[in-house]
Amino acid sequence: MEAFVYTAQPARVVFGAGALQHLGAEVERLGARRALVLSTPEQAAQARRVAEQLGARAAGVYAGAVMHVPVETARAAVAEAARLGADCAVAIGGGSTTGLGKAIALESGLPILAIPTTYAGSEMTPIFGLTEGGVKRTGRDPRVLPRTVIYDPELSLGLPPGLSVTSGINAMAHAAEGLYAHDGNPVTALMAEEGLRAMAAALPRLVRDPADRAARGDALYAAWLCGTVLGAVAMGLHHKLCHTLGGSFELPHAEVHTVVLPHALAYNAAHAPQAMARIARALGAAAGAGAGAVVDAPQALFEQAQALGAPTSLRALGLPAEALDRAADLAAANPYPNPRPLDRGALRALLQRAWDGAAPQA
Ligand SMILES: NC(=O)C1=CN([C@@H]2O[C@H](COP(=O)(O)OP(=O)(O)OC[C@H]3O[C@@H](n4cnc5c(N)ncnc54)[C@H](O)[C@@H]3O)[C@@H](O)[C@H]2O)C=CC1
Ligand SMILES: O=C(O)/C=C\C(=O)CC(=O)O
Figure 1 (cartoon, rainbow, N blue to C red):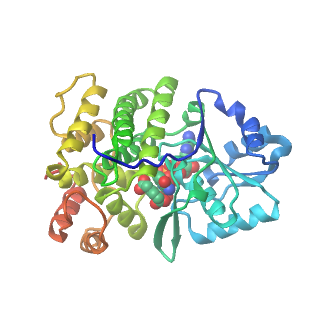
Figure 2 (cartoon, protein in one colour; figure 1 turned 180 degrees about the vertical axis):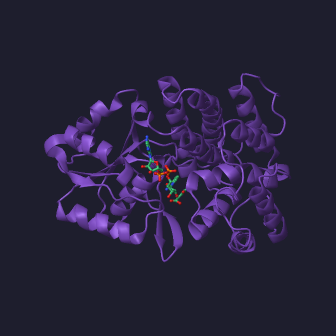
């Protein structure tokens, strides 16, 4: 085995149906007395129930989280936390809400307890994102890594099937790119392959029955693994393309990941054969078909997204055709680690296929 470096992130995970019952004890364990509960406006009722459960340990509810964490929202939440004398942030929701908690932690150092209800995986990463003047910047800081994560499948039962699928594929993207990361290692590869397998197996069950508690649990388990990979190693072309399309063209996060992933993997396939073999093995195992059943990982992902009713074209997400040139320029502009060198012409062709909804092509 080759030498490697693996930095584990020190989060505490409380997992299982009904795990939310441990919230009070977990807040206490953090040494906190006044928790500010965060959510999106859509999940305000869920946040209020969490605050009620916390009783005297709740400082209040701030239900203003929105996607990509605009700095104005972050500043307002920091001010609210200070006004209420909060000494902890409890974030219940998807990546947007966890992201708002991270913005508060970055500014104030407050510990975060995250209760994820999507599969984005932000709860397992020290990565933050902030958007100012239409430009999104991301960074890593150990202060923003949630100190405790409560994964309770009961809380994700309300996630609509469409968003369950796209969010699940967002998670799979972390694992897939983690498998060819320049700083990957055998431990992250194990988590990535198992995360891919578990998510690929859970999603068809969730589409058949969104109330399938076992499938919800399996998907959260997969999200945990995939998020851990995202937090531990560098992402490549796929994540950069998605950040460009999400940040500069305001496309929805999980949906963009879903459309772009097969194309980004096809772009890299010939330069990352071992990663492709592991992705294919995971997808084959998820389908119960065994090793060797899947030979073309990008094509299999494309077909799975189609079969699950997910969007497969950037056009359907509302990206105007005129944006493709600029998106290719932006994606080619900043150097970042990727198995295959970045070629502006090839990226433009990739984006065209993704816009058309065509099958991925190496
Ligand atoms: N820093 C990091 O490591 C990561 C950050 N992100 C960021 O997270 C954001 C996207 O997060 P997502 O989770 O995709 O979307 P989201 O957090 O924006 O949620 C999408 C919508 O679904 C609702 N929702 C969430 N859970 C629900 C449930 N169980 N039932 C009903 N409705 C529910 C939300 O309230 C919201 O309206 C982006 O800004 C992305 O950049 C995503 C992954 C990792
Ligand atoms: O953009 C961020 O807030 C940070 C990372 C991610 O969103 C990861 C992803 O693209 O899913």
